[in-house]
Amino acid sequence: MRLLGPQARHVIAHPGRFLWQTVKAFRANQGLLLAGAVAYYALLSIVPLLILSVIALSHVIDQADLLVTVGRYLEWLVPGQSRAIVGELANFLLHRDVIGWVLLATMLFFSSLAFTVLENAMSVIFLHRVAVRRRHFLVSALLPYAYILSLGAGLLLVTLVASSLQMMGEESFSLWGREWSLSGVSGLLLYLLGLVGEVFVLTSVYLVMPVGRLALRHALIGAITAALLWEVTRHVLVWYFSSLSQVNVVYGSLTTAIVVLLSLEIAAALLLFGAQVISEYERIGRGGEVPPQPFHTD
Image (cartoon, rainbow, N blue to C red; front, side):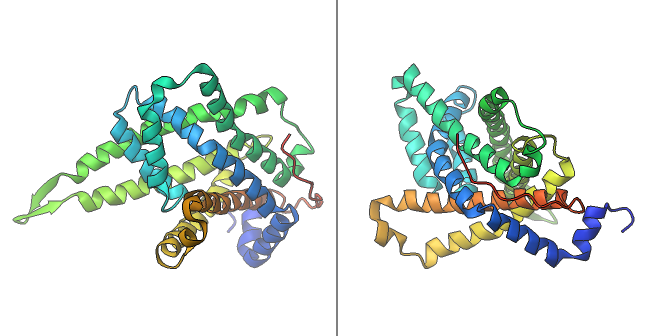
């Protein structure tokens, strides 16, 4: 215990109190309202962002392999709806020769909206940081595009690694006179790759979006919290939509959009809750309550 800092010792000694304080702060900051705004703009951003990424990466990676990888990891973000989104991506890629500069600029603009709104939401949660230091407007303007480039590079790396793991899954080896397939090992490694990638992306969001420099261990605390909560939630969502939900009867052709928006809102709420965990962890022992502020997108 002596090796731990005072903040960690406080959480270990009073886990229930820390959790309750975090939930209270999340409600005071209107976390669900913030999550709704982030989810709405993420819904507008996700397709243009994927189109731009796939068009750029299809010049260096086989398009089929790229779409398979995108579909696999979209399933982590929008459980049960990745096939519909990948189908739209494939249709768009068939007609990508008609993309002009105006359409390209429009897609680039919409793909950055979610990052801008997410930055504003983070400023509400980390108000104690904003009150001390504000980010230059040029940094805020360029940050979404720098992050888009980073996500594109990450998608390239993940596609290459996933393709290698899939090839490994087709192999087998002989042991004790029997043939053993590596498909199970390949599937496990693909799952771990997705989980590690999820934690990495969340950590990068918590490091970049809040104003000021955040300690890596604090970002990891929020990322692991949000990732574990989302892992449980997405499995529940998959079970619910496949077993109990009648959403397709109620919404008909709008089902995909409704389910994607619901999934994005839950994911955004957990993302912001992870940020609230970091914020409350930082403020342990500092005192001084910061009153909640209204959310704005300008």
